[in-house]
Length: 205
Image (tube, rainbow, N blue to C red; front, side, top):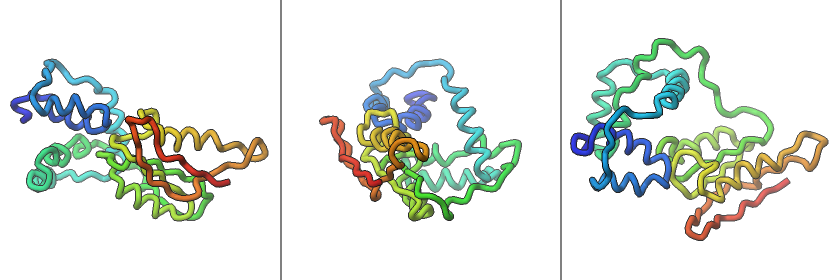
């Protein structure tokens, strides 16, 4: 497919899955009806900043054989896009080691952790969010938004936007305004983009 559609085909597929609004254009490209523009890819600065975070955060395999085996395995399991995701990336050649150990999630603390997660996030899937929620225990609540894409806030999703900025606005410094409020329970949401409505969030003091 990449040989037919052009070198931008796989990056376009990667990026297009990060936002539901990109699906029509992505589908058109897969169908062969989109025009492939020649020239260098943009977004170099954004990609560099992303690599700085993910390559420093984790200890990535450095042997190329690991990635060769992963690509072959993913060809069978997920032929549409698995090989591209499993392939070698700059983190395998990162020149510095991680400076600090990874942060351990959990432990005692105040109940002030709010996780807002898209149910169909292609980059950070829902099972991982559930594991994080479980690690925080009683300290956290999670709102699972019925949408795809990577990132919830500022997108055309009323429920996700209500869960985040609205929750932060409810918090006030001690002694100034009402006491902070927190979701009474974890919430699974059903987004209804055609009607512009979503499940109403319930909060408790």
